[in-house]
Amino acid sequence: MEGYVKCKDGLQCISEEYKCNGGDADCEDNSDESPDLCKGYIFSYFNELNHKMLKLTLRLKVKQYRLKKVLILLLKLKKTLLDNV
Image 1: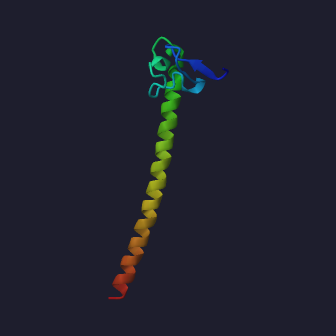
Image 2 (image 1 turned 180 degrees about the vertical axis):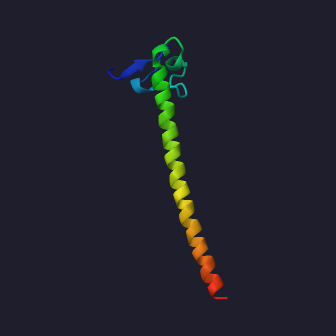
Image 3 (image 1 turned 120 degrees about the vertical axis):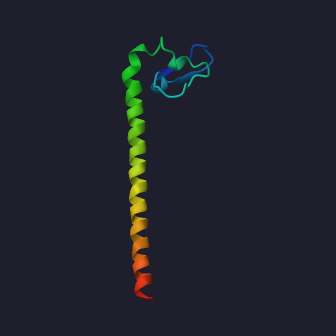
């Protein structure tokens, strides 16, 4: 089937994009991440890591933004409470 590769054991197929992606093995026999198969895939491994790092960085920035908003609200609330004392 186009776009899929057979695992070495012949019992399973995975999407071509998961072959040598540097992540956890997708084939149950781990053949999709074997060093022999993945010799030419070092750049895709680093691209995958880079993509994951970018996603984590974006999540962190969103959380930082939300925390700043909460902090600003808390500071406004504190000021309001102190003004009413």
